[in-house]
Length: 91
Image 1 (cartoon, rainbow, N blue to C red):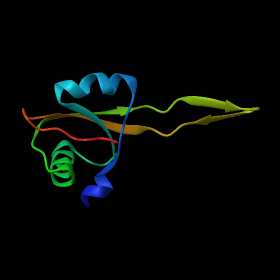
Image 2: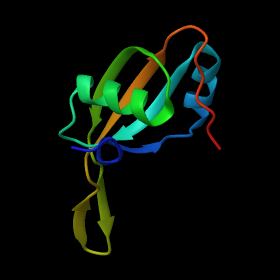
Image 3: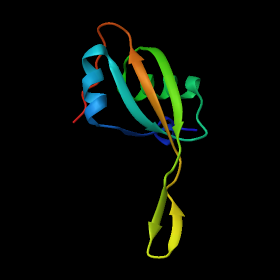
Image 4: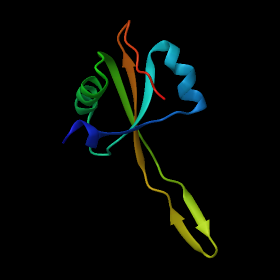
């Protein structure tokens, strides 16, 4: 897998912006990627050193449209902690 196949997007939420001063960033990642692949992809794309990767799967929610039930897809997210002195500039 290529780095850009593993890292889909940087998630900018209210909670994730509070973590940025601590050097933590939230990424939307490929569901089949493991922590080692996520670490290498972030280091390669953003040219930073990663201290720790915490990954988790967010379950999709049940939604109803008229009379049919549906489900939003499951997503995998990764909380990446960078080493001291490293930053990612997110626009």
